[in-house]
Length: 66
Image 1 (tube, rainbow, N blue to C red):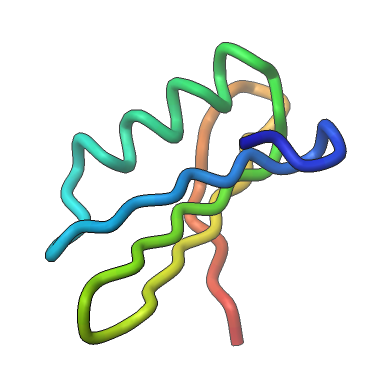
Image 2 (cartoon, rainbow, N blue to C red; image 1 turned 180 degrees about the vertical axis):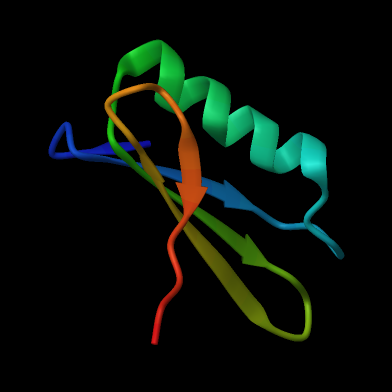
């Protein structure tokens, strides 16, 4: 899902988020040139999210939330 052309939100319902799930979000970010991405996992016992930012050089970094 793309929100306001600024953020891609990838929704999952998995027991664990693995590298291939992150890679899917990163591929969407690179293909659409959207600079921010959010991976949200609705596990059965908790809600988990990760934020990423795509730099101008195409490198994707995880955002550290305080």
